[in-house]
Structure formats: structure tokens, C-alpha cells
Length: 258
Image (spheres, rainbow, N blue to C red):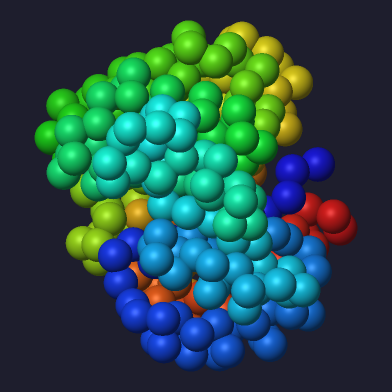
């Protein structure tokens, strides 16, 4: 049985002080929520302090990116070994902002996925289409290409050690959200695509939805059979919103168990 996961992506926001204040607000209410998994992906300079604050809690530490190379002469890069040394469990790879703003190709994302696995991290692989691609009816083609780049380099079995996050780019930070049915359709496609290579890996694969998830829509999204939680952007910076989303994940998990 798959376990729901809620991962907050703080992006390039906050200071050490504001991050500590946010954690003080969210950790006590999340502590009793034992049914699902929870994580926050903090900016690099905050990882050590956030990791210390999370110690002993049921919220795991994650990073937002990593270098596709090992330690060495890569000025500005942060390696998987460094993230593991900071206590990270998760790392986001291939977020749409990394692809669009920083020009990361499918192959670079696949290299980063491989580096995450090499250093014992759980990669959260982001896939998804922009609005023009959705309107052109090529969502599945785009998502398949992004998935296939990783499986071609790492093998389908490597997905058993990671998480996939479907993020329709047109719904990130726009206030727009895919309907539960739209999200389910793409999640089912992803599971089917992986299942064509290995059905057991596909059945166990955690697939998150990321695209303006809020307290008001989380329960409906997480109730979909192939939606296993969320990658949460802006709402992860608001304590009440993030707590409510985590509670929705726990409720979804309890429903599955029942």
C-alpha cells in the first residue's frame, strides 16, 4: 500500500528567523499526524538550521535541487554528498522552474536523479506540461518524454527509490488548479507508463500532485486513486494552509487503510 506524502517546497523564500518561526507553528500540529509522510524542502543556506529544528519530529528534511556532478571544481554547485551530510532525505529534481528558468534539459534532470540515488537521497522527480502543450493535446507526450529520460539512464527499477510529482506548469503559482479528474488522468497515465516497464514498481510508486494545492482543494485531490499526496509551493509558507493539507493527506491515508 502506498503512503501519502506532503512535501513543502519553500523555493527562494524566507530567512533563518522566518523559517524557524514557520517550523514552530507547523511542527506541533503535524506531530500527531502519523498516517502519512511529511517533508519540507528548504533553501540551501537554511538546510542545517532547518534540519536541526526538524530533529526528532515526523517531518523530513529535503533540498530543492542538487548538482549533476560529484564533488569537485563546480563553483556554486551543491552535491548529493553534501545534502546527505546535512541530513537531507529528499531532493527535488527537474522542477519546472529549473527547466524553464535555468534551462535544464531532460538529460540533465536524469543525471541529477542518478546523483540523488547514488548518495542515498530520495529524488522527487517533477514532470509536467506548459499551457500551450496542454492546449495542443500533447500533455502525455511531454510527460512521457520527461519520464523516459530518467528510465533510459537509470532503469525503471530506479523509480522504486524515488517519487514522481506531476506539476502542470500552467497551475503553478497562478491560482489555477487542475481539477481532481484532470490530475487523476495524468497520474494514471504516469503509473501506466511506468507499469509498461515494471508493474510492481508502478503499483508502489508515489505520485504527487503539484499545482496550486491549497487547504480548500487538497482533500478532493488526494482522494483520487492515483494521487498520493502533494508537492506544495506557496501554501507551504503559510502555517495554517500547510497544516490543513497535511491533515488532508492523513485523512486520505486513513480512508485507504479503512
